[in-house]
Amino acid sequence: MDFSINYTVEQIDEIIQHFKNWSNENNRPYYDDEYTVEALKTYATRGGLETYQDLRLVLPYILKASSILEIGAGYGRVIDYLLNLKFKKQIYAIERSPMFCKLLRKKYARSTINIIEDDIQTTSSLKPVDIILWMWSGISDFSQQEQSLVIKKIAALINPQGHLIIETFHHTTNPINAIVSTNQSYVIPSGKRIAYGYIPSPQEIENYAMIARFTAVKYLEYQTTTGRPRNMYILSKE
Image 1 (tube, rainbow, N blue to C red):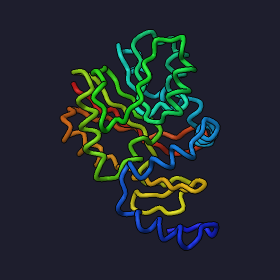
Image 2: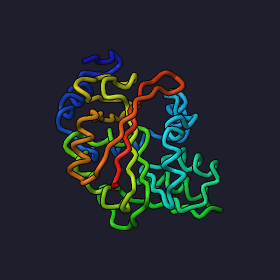
Image 3: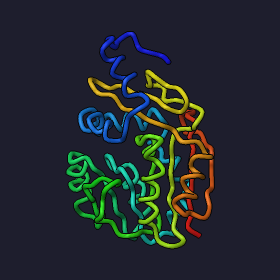
């Protein structure tokens, strides 16, 4: 474990207290208070994702889809890519941040994109689609115990012969801005808030897929344009 000297003893105690006992809900204050469009774009550029290398890897799946749902739309990075492709079919985006939903609705006011302000864990308002895109380590915002449950929930939102595409950190690495990292778990501070994360391994993703009744899993390793190792998974209902 590596603790920054910029953090007080009390803050480090709080980190340790929750490190092995956190849930996605613990991350809500971090994303509500610390994430801005500028911050996300900076992270995307630093991580090599602003050039859409991740999305280009799964372009054949995107082009075959009649409907797409993105989980965690943020400032619209994935939506921008789809619109740049002249993707004319149905696009849905679920985002639980009221601030980002307001921004997205204004940004895409002239399009037919459906922006849904809701939590993927509890939503009951989504219709099944051909592809669900869960990019930029979204799954890692859920604890190891939660990940299987949320993938099972997501699986019910995918049409027969559809796909769930998950992109995340490589499971043997840790985010460079983490102050605690061990055994695929990490803690990232920003301002007065803390984010917890867990990076699933390929074997864990396969186990989650089996429980959720996906029939195939394809695993790809790649590096971003800034040299960051990442994992891509395509879970299929074939």
